[in-house]
Image (cartoon, rainbow, N blue to C red; front, side):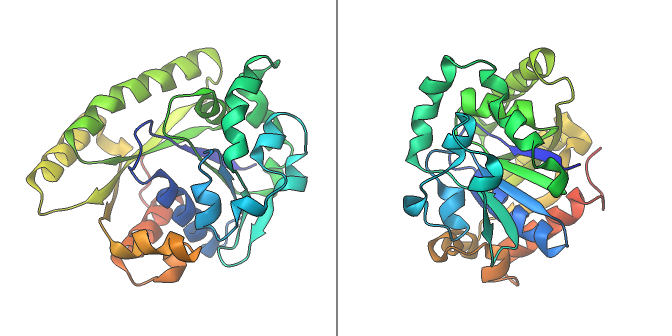
Length: 256
């Protein structure tokens, strides 16, 4: 059965989509069967995987509303080696439409259960908000990966996210745990980055991944070519960091 991992942070611009796409490709390179779920109406994980969201007649939106089976909507990303459940702006309307539906928090979980046996990992790229879409992801996942920049406001927002995770665990998904915190856009020359990094290690201990994802132009360039950075420039520091993260998640020093 697949291990479902939600990539969550309500703060935008912290590297959620970059992490989701590159981790999917890195795990696929390791021989794992991967499904990447784009749960963000911006559809950046879809485009970053090389799939044109504008041409998608069926997306995760249709799956959540029960209009299509997930197996009929997913697409295979040839260059990345993983399957993708795409998203586009249609998903923005799902928030309102889901409110009146039965089991609104568990729609994604129910859909994923139909195909979970076909995968080793399911990665869910979440929107930058603690919305009903994010609650669906947290209900469907067993673990949460939290990408975060090492800056002051990141620490402030982390307490809100941890509170949401606790509420979902108490009411919807008792299995939910934090897999780890991933430090992204890390600049070792920046004193604040070092201080926040140390605070995270002191507070969360082995829940902080050893891997540090640096600021890297190749990570920023790759989405415009529709190719994960681990394939676009495998030798770049950013790509190497995500390959190292995949190794951690596969058990070589993964947080407990």
